[in-house]
Length: 321
Image (cartoon, rainbow, N blue to C red):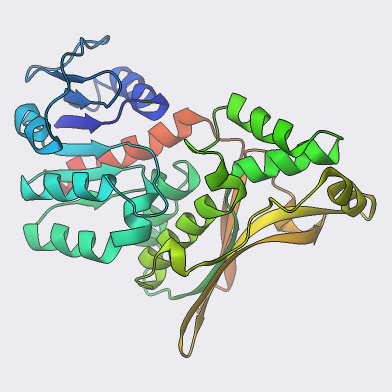
């Protein structure tokens, strides 16, 4: 199966490394990589381990035409305001009969219903496991293991940067130092403000609601308030009460639609939502037949995100076999 990668940052390079390790069992070939920074590399026989980038293709359409791949792998950075240009990248791939795997939550948060319908009409596969929890099984879990279950809502601590900032302030550091620490760990979005102002969490909330509850919403419709008002003094005062703060995403199905929100909430340290530190993330699903259950990822790294993309590619290969 031939792959065309759009974006080649940390996740793209980790994915390429993983594909090389698993090549004997899963013979996937990268025939093209397109980036804004390095340019474009295309080779129908498969790119070398260290691709030689040339002049950037004049458009995504031109790149996809040249790569002649079976699957377009969209790995660009998040734009929580519009989901672009990733949405257009995915549509261009569908127009060329390519299946799509993405780790970008923007398209799922802004245009999931449209993209799902386009893929369905064209008989193509669309997968996005790494969009919300760094590759931990969320969407594939619901698709493959939970027949007949209805999601009534969900609750999650889904943003790593905000946790790192809060934990930094609990130990006497400044807000800005916490952001810098998260950036040095490589866990912030391209613009760290997206994390601390709540937009990353809002995009994840919208994406989850769109896929699991058919909410047809956007991040702008999620009532959002980040952690920017918190100070070290306030966080330490809360800590002395054996409590902490977490940026919590909540969604609930109501008789009139959905309520979606992101808030910095004060929680007892024994609250399950408070017990996932640092880069670890947790989501609880509230359902009609299974009550509440959850998924947790413990200190995921870029390799876990790459694995989520890889698992999607394996599923695509099985479906089109």
